[in-house]
Image (cartoon, rainbow, N blue to C red):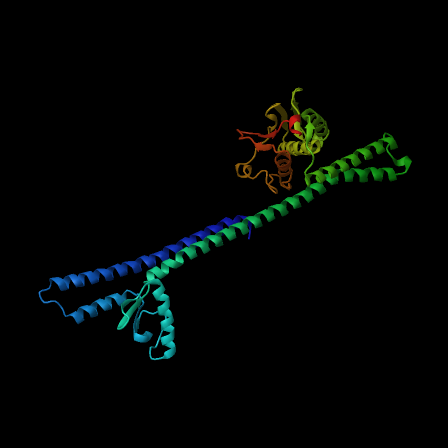
Length: 397
């Protein structure tokens, strides 16, 4: 079942339980009303006999009262000396008193009734044994039905949550695998190009490219591959957090992105505003660089084909930490996506995998105990705020 169908299934279950409970209790209410009507008939009959000038005979009165009581559904058993069963009414089972086996069955039932209600009468003559009316027997089951319904609902809720989490985990790992393949693709393609260039005879190589330059570019691609490998290695563990300067992260990130902006999104200007007196934060430089890179690339995707401005601004103090804001002049984020933007698999790109911002949230919030959020936007553009805790040497961070 798809994740979005679980709330519907649980809602149907709750409605079904509610309907059943209403019907069941309505039957009990109707039975109790009928029982009350029977008692009122008894009262009316007794009152009529007391006010009539010629009262009915005792036999008639007793017969009428007995008929009314028996119609109430209360199980009644009359036993004589020696536990002989003389008469029965409203038993929950069929019994032929002429058969010894049925006599024994009724006597066992009488012992259960006597535990609930002491018998009435003279043991030397006859005893009347009686049980609860059907309404009471029905009410006994209601707590069990309610508990069973709640347990069933809780079980289905837990099952739905587990399925949802498993689905999200699978989606996250699938997205991570695609993201890894995507990031490895660029340096691998570059290495393949340099290898093809080296295979050319010396006379066919471009004159402006010498082996030393090729070796330097190959080394840069290998460094990039090592960096990618190190990133994905860190995301699966709890890295050690240390004192990190934001200037040392944003400066190299700006140079890295500006060299690639013409290829990723032409016509985009990257502006950086980082005060020199920013306090250090408690973090991991490799992962923080990756998180910020993903947020800026998200802004580049928003400006792709249109051009615009991306502003990276950092503020903070030694007590509250540092806030890094990334603002773009793009079209903004659609309202239906905003609440799920940081979930794995959620993307506004036609060919996106929805991993970048999910990774950024995991790095900022899961690893660094910070916070990343999308600001309530105005008419256009989007602004992401990344809150990072300050580094305090006395805490041992």
